[in-house]
Image 1 (tube, rainbow, N blue to C red):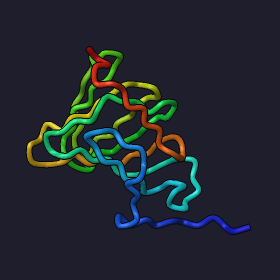
Image 2: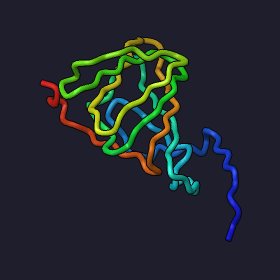
Image 3: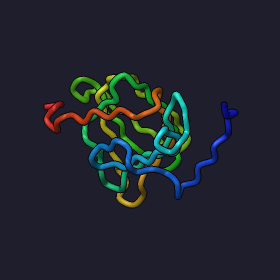
Image 4: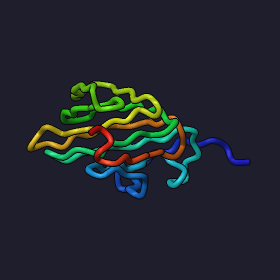
Length: 133
């Protein structure tokens, strides 16, 4: 039986083959696909200037994010009725099954988050664009 090991994963090793939502880019850093046995998932999330994600949720997963750069407007709720701005240095908690969307109001700078999810493989349920109409 092998002993546990610490894994160092550099950006060139991040995996873009993870579940995606239109308008954003997720890259896995800590995931079974990278040969790292873990009960949680970790990676980066980015939305380019002026773009937004589609409406989505993460099933039974909880998400914790830390804002590395940029500003993001997050909307959530059954009809998108709630919103808040997240900026550099903020932590974000997204409860399981909560529909939400992220918008980058900047015309110049992407926003980037470090994301940790409560299961080893990310769950992404993309919802129809008319979910909140």
